Amino acid sequence: MEELIEKAPQKCGVYIFKGKRKPVYIGKAKNLKKRLQQHLKLAQKDPKEAMIINSAVGLEWIITRNEYEALVLEIDLIQSYKPRFNVLHKYGSGYPMLLITQDSYPTVKVVRGTQHEGLLYGPFLQAKKANQVKRLIHKLFRLRTCDPMPVRKEPCMDYHLGLCCAPCCGYATKKEYNLNLESAKALLSGKVGEVLPELYSRLEEFSRELMFEKCAVIRDQIKALENISKGQGVSALPFEEADFIYRLGLRVGMFLIRGRKLISKRVYDFEKEEEVEEFVLGYYYSNYVPSLIITNFTLSDEVKRWISSKAKTSLRFVEEAPKELLELADENLKDSVNLEALEREFLQKLGMDMPKVIEGFDISHFYGEDTVGSCVVWEGGKMNKKRYRRYKIKSLNGIDDYGALREVLTRRAKRLKAKTEPMPDAWLIDGGVGQLNVALEVRERFRLSFRVFSLAKEEEILFTDKGDALPLKENHLLYRVFGEIRDEAHRFALTFNRKLREKRALEDVLSKVKGVGEARKRIIYRNFESLYEFIEAEDEELKRLGLPTSLKQEVKRYIL
Image (cartoon, rainbow, N blue to C red; front, top):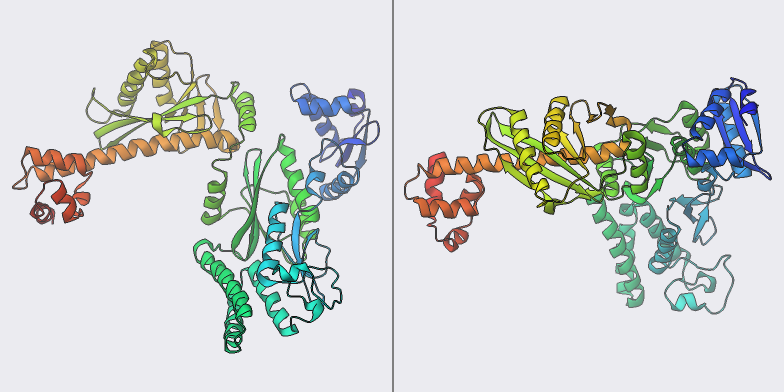
């Protein structure tokens, strides 16, 4: 294989690792020789790369005029041969969509691909959901279930089960069926305002004619569509339709937005960097291309050009996701950290096994007053709030972040040495190299053996106890873990500092208000966090605590 790779040209094209019966891997490259040499180098430490090299019995390449031609050829070859180690073909069969057919009495069908006559809705990233929505449409709007529609004298069982209105027997007029059809389209598109007035009109008509059974059917349809309309007021997104592809390292979330609502989502995990692009290409090989694709990472010009060629309408690409979508992605992915991928990141980037426990620390003060420290704990892939600790700084006054940090870490180290707290695998300090050095000093003094890191907010660079500086924005999974711990330590310390300041403000005011003795002060301190909370308290609450309601007015009068 090394000899074959040495013969490869330094030109753009597609390379094929040939197996005994069919290719085992197909890729493209701007420089074929350099890319193939990368495969050889990676095979020394990457098991999957080693399997590609060891499984191959030959090597071929096809030179192309440019990178776009290489991309198109690569996609076609992968879809034709479906090599074992490519992921593109795994996503190229197409996800299910719902099709409203173009018959005289249209119905709804679950289909794959986009080459169908009629209106398509979806795709649905879970086939089960597509079938559930289809059943719901039959139940609510009673579109025909037979395909093709037969001519019958008596309706089938689906009519008696309330799943079909039996147009095959003439039980539904063309006008009634079309209203059911438009209602089904409104359900799928979210555009309910166009059909609701007509449904209410039909409800009144059936009511006047005492057709109560049909009234019940229309009532259920109205209720279902109005529920969708109410939901839009809460969850409406700023796009009529879009695909949002959100990436965290080698984890990718696909979010499908149709009718300004999230209709489907799925998370995918990959092992190699190039597999992310393969997934995007494979997905759009057979799936519907919307008018807008939003990503939080950069797609190459060749990929954008190829996807645009698959679109039936004009297509825009946006690489800056709006706040609503970022919050949506974070909400859906925050509990979905791929621990296996995270383990690889720790091993490859930091040379360590993934920690089971990381303790995060931060210092907060208000111009040198009410200086406090926080300790938060990341355990088993998520924050463990039961083990959070907070510290009032006792050894110094004024602004001295290093001194305050030294005190907090010393107090924590003493508890670790005394085994009153379980030993962590790492410390993370909110700050830069200076804060890191303070932590290393404490670690060495107490002869602790865990790793120590620091992360400063401005640069987002992780400083390690081995002298390395790792840009975390380029390492998404590590950034997610360390960034979450750092931000949580900062929030916890800031909240404690604010509470102390509010308590002090409350104490200062109460000491100057008439009618507040030491006993009443203690009651107020224990039950109210701030002046605002005290003056906003209900009179009944004050009476339960044995405090006169007039006291609230005295405090208000003093501060106003």
